[in-house]
Image (cartoon, rainbow, N blue to C red; front, side, top):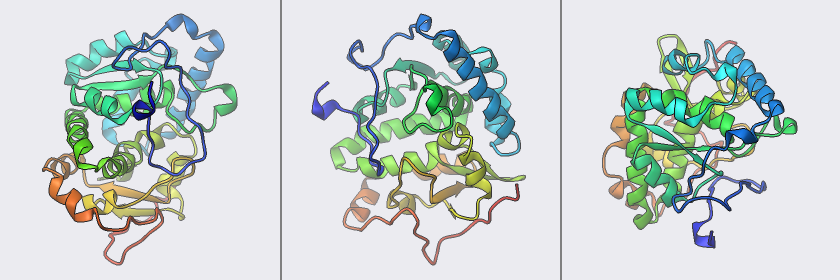
Amino acid sequence: MTTSDAPVTYGASTHGLRGDYAGMRPDYTVEQDYSKYREPDQDRWRRLYARQMRLVPGRACPEFLRVVDTLGYEAGIPRFGEVNERLRRATGWEVVAVPGLLPEHVFFTHLAHRRFPVTVWLREEHEFDYIVEPDVFHDFFGHVPLLFDPVFADYMQAYGRGGQKAEGLHALEYLARLYWYTVEFGLVRTDGGLRIYGAGILSSPSEVTHALSSPLPHRIGFDLKRVMRTRYKIDTFQQTYFVIEDFGQLFRETAPDFTPLYAEIAGQEPYPADTVLPQDPLYLPVED
């Protein structure tokens, strides 16, 4: 793996990233060697799953809750092939095993072909409460259930195709912010109030409540240009969350060609993560 092919993150962090890339294929995929998961790993997975399932009812979006407890996650670490049988039938997606974070062009190519990369390794016991980079629990629990939703699944593919185009426009940082504030840390307005759809929140025990109920972060109505100009941090609670009306809005607002938008914001300074603008529509915390 050359320097130009190394994984990139645009968030502020002092944390080094990990993953065993030695045995990967040219597309960065690997086999899920299920024999490497020992009983302590399976027990850790079951405890992670049980904890999150106590937290997400009433907080996660309905599209997530309709699926997550049907996937058999309570039994232990999922097998990729078993999940793919159902996922392909539902939306034509599949999950592919990867060693860790991917270079942007590799990641975008997988998404554009309806393949979602899932990290094969599981966090250690000392990381039970907090981990910076995605592991197999974050990916399977946080991301995969929403790939069963047709509208969200189409958004993910469109995002991948947009990323392939953005590489030649020097605009990847803008797309990284969009992904962060939607797929990883997005909130959605529902008839029952604000709910979570971002995988980084859904797979975190403490950010589930922080995102909805803490008075500290800002919850701002989704605006595409605003999101693309907002910085983020990868190793602390979010200072800002963006709220969509529904997945349809997310797909509609990100469907057009971004080229003119990239040109418009290229010369503009990005906003710090805790910025609130006078025109920002704000949402109040949810009573816990």
